[in-house]
Length: 278
Image (tube, rainbow, N blue to C red; front, top):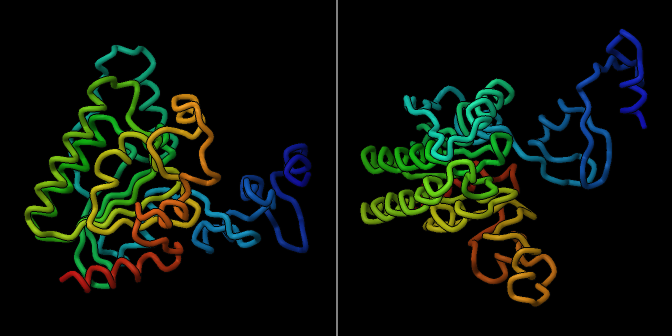
């Protein structure tokens, strides 16, 4: 394969292909069609494979760039850090390494911004940080964002991607389900719009709490959404499940989400929903 050939080259980190100078590390393989893609081409296509249309996951910064008007995003700076209730020796080190690797403080970033001129509070989760798991910091950031939306009277938008509660924080992570749910309840009582955008994958405690409590629930195409995985459910109930039963398309058909929106259409769709609900 071309990637293997690149890796075997000597000290020169470049390869000439079709008169284009390509650096090692500028390639990525599509997990769906196996096509080798230029990362820059992928980025310019909204992290969608130009060959087969498969969706790649997005870094928090890239997601915010694609949704929020340029120069309007203001992050909430919360001086909080992770806890280690189970006294796991490697957990603090793992968090530090992930912060260096991803340039993220945690699995979610929250702040204010504008979508085509409309003010919003926005939260974006990232699967690159412990699979977007919800620990105490994630729960606190989501709750703080909800409270700011109530105070500012702004619509709330949350982009989810998560494997569920963070097992390294034990029962404290599970408590974030109740905490975020109660905050969303107060937002609802205040009569403010909340839009949840489910991306691949959204599972566990996130699905079972704030992700499913929105006024309007959108999803990206073919996103996997659920509480437990298919194998776990089948082993528990002793029955086979329908094909694709946790895909966004299946959930739309059965009334669990309101609309599937192509990534390139998300910003304008959110704008129209905000305008309709003013």
